[in-house]
Image (tube, rainbow, N blue to C red; front, side, top):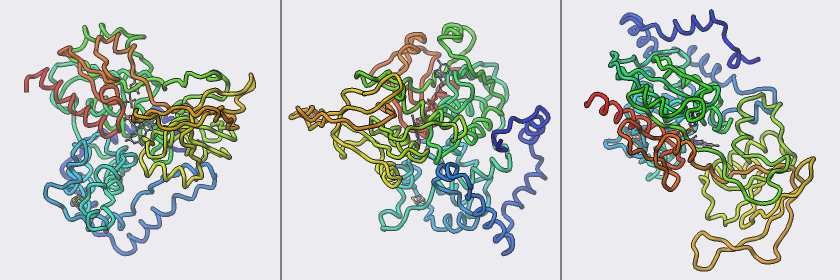
Length: 486
Ligand SMILES: Cc1cc2nc3c(=O)[nH]c(=O)nc-3n(C[C@H](O)[C@H](O)[C@H](O)COP(=O)(O)OP(=O)(O)OC[C@H]3O[C@@H](n4cnc5c(N)ncnc54)[C@H](O)[C@@H]3O)c2cc1C
Ligand code: SF4
């Protein structure tokens, strides 16, 4: 059993708690700052570099396949990278980030050796700074906006620098924020994903009592259960959640609001409620054979992979993934990395219409995944023992109807496979919306109730971690104003 998955004994926990909760004295802080700023000797640097490069050579090929796709920077590499930043005024990288992290400020602190200060800038603006450093689509956000792109130079490696600073505070178990003076107000948060956790951090810093309700056994939402393994692993998501929960948040896992506890009861017991329930089940294909063994939601496959040893996650020899969004790409890539001989995306529209990010598609192609465009499934073939194939028709653009496709008569054909993963997008949680009395329009929740606020995927229809973090913070601000009027 790995060190990370080891369940700590009560004594371990007590020690960890004491370590994390201890407020450092000014003398401690001075010592830490001196430690951080000390210019390392040549021998120190060599040792650090070896330490940093030594780790990623796991003997198990599956461990290797799921190793970090973007390994961390060494201390020297971080110093060099940070020194390349132009510290732009009105920095476009900051504007491009939905949480508006002051990127030049945190990079400057890395350059001067103040990693604690750097992490504080990041996590103050974005409580999900650890996960965003690993999983954010930076190519289309901060790094895509970096001015160096216009000079045909490589943009600053903002995500890796962010990881460098945030990893430091996790490793050193530094506590960056404190709970505020108690206001006597109670807030319930439904859903302990990125949106809920981000709201919780600010609400606790402002002194409100926070109770989080979470259906799953662990907090983190899709950070724990959905993000591709080679970007981020569940223990990191849990450690990130822990930094927020340690501000004194009460977390009740395994509780589904609307089933185990009525939403109306929350309304009676709390002064305000933040709904951050994310999205629900995957859309169905609506074709014969969908119930056969071997047909599964892509998200369920990814969750199995993330919650048990790789060797225990079964995958077929020939896997077909239906859909071409980011979840489909994550599923096909991970199926291939898990050992599928063939892993194929089937998408009913053309290559130009693929909704997944271009760099994600490139990754899947590099991994040897196949793409079949303009093909639409009509039937899954098989028997009680499982799937044997998926029958598809070829499609073409429908005249005069942008984005629509029509089947080409007589183009039926079978793709042999033993597994079909459905990745057609998640559905909104309409049952929850009804139970909570909030509106659901075009897949987005809104609330007209003065004490009920919504945010994250359930409100924006499904975006990224960084959007959920920004919306969680915005909701916390609105709740704070509604409770205290300032
Ligand atoms: C497969 C996949 C891969 C992704 N990869 C990336 C990526 O690489 N980078 C990126 O930035 N974004 C990625 N995303 C998007 C990102 O994960 C989401 O935008 C983000 O997690 C949304 O946060 P959230 O808090 O709104 O919702 P969630 O993370 O879904 O959290 C909602 C939580 O609410 C809980 N809940 C639901 N109903 C109830 C209830 N009734 N009672 C109690 N609890 C409830 C759920 O169990 C869940 O834990 C990915 C999404 C998917 C599906
Ligand atoms: S745009 Fe690029 S160079 Fe300018 S501050 Fe941001 S990261 Fe630094």
